[in-house]
Length: 213
Image (cartoon, rainbow, N blue to C red; front, side, top):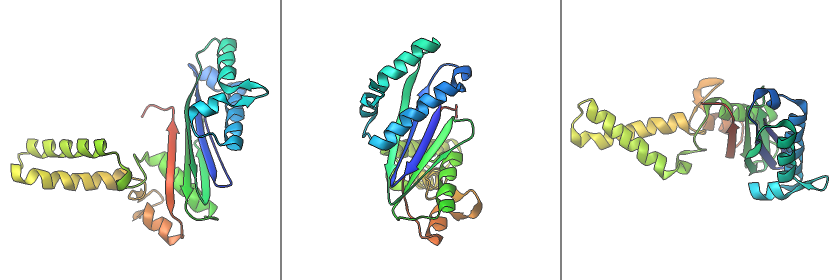
């Protein structure tokens, strides 16, 4: 079960995992996930360990999850906990509670629909990072290597391989970083341009899913 919430410049998303859909759709299981999220929103823990140590009705969250495992006979674990902070924040939970996103913006009072559009963009398009500067170096190195190898297999001359790989890396950035992606509601504009036209600046996002992708 993946749930998210956003309020007063702080947004959090977390996932409580179990083994079967039967338990995942159980009202008590969803309520437990919600109560953990409520505590996270109130206390704003800085890490998963801090979250697990927080208490609900005098019991640590970690113990509550263990107890629920004993009741259902299924292994359960708090699998993800992420948060963002900003002038404005938004959360989006995809129907079915298997996928959620949170996004932070620099400005206060960002239009609700604009914020939601960006959260839905992150959910639908699964970007690897916010922008090209935040893509991990390891990912960049892999993309360049794959690009060179592909060009080599296509019979391109050796002295052209690096240039071709750089071109493919640029395409990767455009498809895989949130701000450079084509906006899902209007593919003629990038997410960055859509945000600019609405006086908004996305500064961070998190995406959590239990789906196989």
